[in-house]
Amino acid sequence: MRAWMILGAALAAAPLDGAMAQDADAGQRVFNQCRACHTINQGGRNGVGPNLHGVWGRKAASVEGFRYSNPMRERAAAGLTWDEETLRSYITDPKAVVPGGSMAYPGLRNAQQLNDLLAYLQRASTAQ
Image (cartoon, rainbow, N blue to C red; front, side, top):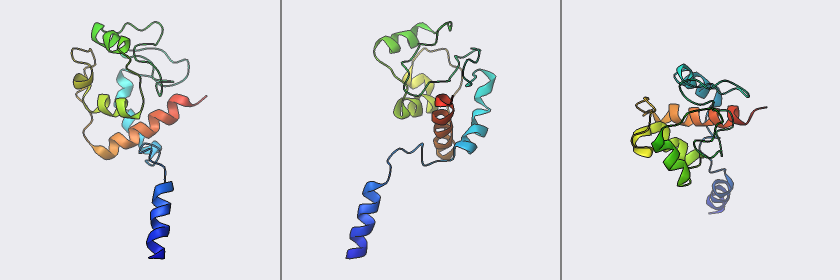
């Protein structure tokens, strides 16, 4: 009984942030698919898509100098902010989150790659 109580306490204290428990280095390799349109380095240029440095916790459609689609600007005006939940949904199925948006990517369906990518995005988008 004592062992179960200790295990339960340990699980309760464990971090719930799924992206942090994953492999950010593997996520960097997954991000290679994104590099055709996005950069993530601080001060990096916008491409077909906006620079993603600082995306974690950022209000959608807020990168200066990037021309967002009307649907993305509308979602931003409605309060869309990029966090683990919204990024997970958007990367999995961009058209479901922003119908009519301009992101051509069909979505990432592999759960492990998605978790790793989110860990990388969080780490890289906050790096100095």
